[in-house]
Amino acid sequence: MEPELLVEDAEGIRTVTLNRPQAMNALTDTLRASIGEAVRGFDADDALRVLILTGAGRGFCAGADLSAPTPVAAVPKAPRPRFWWHLPFEETNKPTICALNGAAAGGGIGLALSCDFVIAAESARLHPAFVGLGLSPDNGISQKIVARIGYEKSLMFFLDGSPLDAAGAKAIGLVDEVVPNDELVMRARALAATFANRPAVSVSLTKRLLKEARKLDRANALILEEAAIALARQTEDAAEAVAARREKREPRWKGY
Image 1: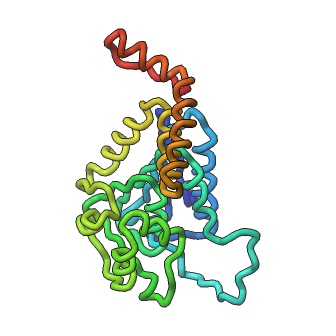
Image 2: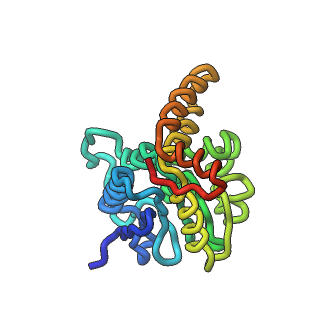
């Protein structure tokens, strides 16, 4: 039996592929847990610099697998909120890229937006689905979509309920880039390779600063920047950058 999630590591890049193409990669409990573990493993491995998330087949993710719905009354009390499996995406300070290879519906959109960057194939479609099913947004989508496109556009997206094609999604800022279908993997890997070949500590500090900046006032953001750059200046990569400029050559990053 094929695993529901495929994980491949090469050249500092982890590629995570949802592997239920017969069900449009709909999310099962097993798949959710596997995604969380794959991201945690990525974050813990210093040899891995960038993560790419994509789907097998013609769809990215159809959201929750509703083929065997569980009655609300039968849901057991959980020690933490059900959708906390998304937290590894928030906790990593390494870049993450979603290669949106096809349709994403409901929570599948939330999963795509968990990544820092979303590159969509021309055939990709985003279907909010929730309100049309008598449901409300889940899988972290409410926070991520407002951060990307603002309250008003987010509310219109959910209440209107109409699917957006890739071009429409880019026009309102839901995806960052649209490429021909046959160029999606190549573009995602090229971007990942660019990030993977940057100085790792600098990348991590930069991502963390920008994440925290959304929560801080100006004074505290300046304090955090000062602490971060003090750390960055102590790395061998910072010294290598100075040496490379002095010697008029490309820097040879060490990752520390």
